[in-house]
Length: 229
Image (cartoon, rainbow, N blue to C red; front, side, top):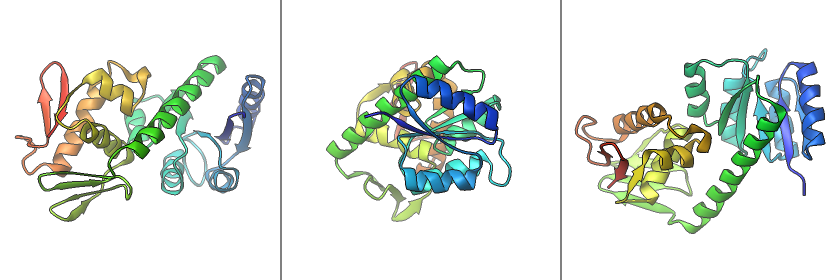
């Protein structure tokens, strides 16, 4: 069974080029040229993965990505000419599973698609095998509801923050190396990008810890990684 890709981009010629080359590599490709049509097609088509541009009229890629993540669990890959670090972080924070600049070759794009799909498949299997609820002191993580509470009060986490917390919590008490966390949350192509990890650890501490400067939930094992609990 072939993989179905939904490509959402207002550049018609580029869409046609990617459609042709990805089809030749064995993928099924459907197109949408704005965020609204992309959302409609995602609902009806149920694709395996979504490729999403950022700079689009009316509803840009940021808002479209957020809406995709609210309506389904389909992996989203930002495919854009916007290559600043701030944009990469923003895309991942909104729940994008990868962020690719449009200078990418079709072969690399296909490889990244396959990597994201493998990671999503492993994540789905692991989720079914894991306990639905994990508690630590005043923190409760409910995986079925995708909900985190501290002292009974719900804490809003971005998709990336929730994914990072989930990996840490499901390996409670174990020191998880930097590269392991980067691979599990962002993918193997982000190995070595420790600044991403530090940034999101700081986000989680600010939202979950009583005193982020003296953490009691997420511990830093210097030079190695992080430990939950």
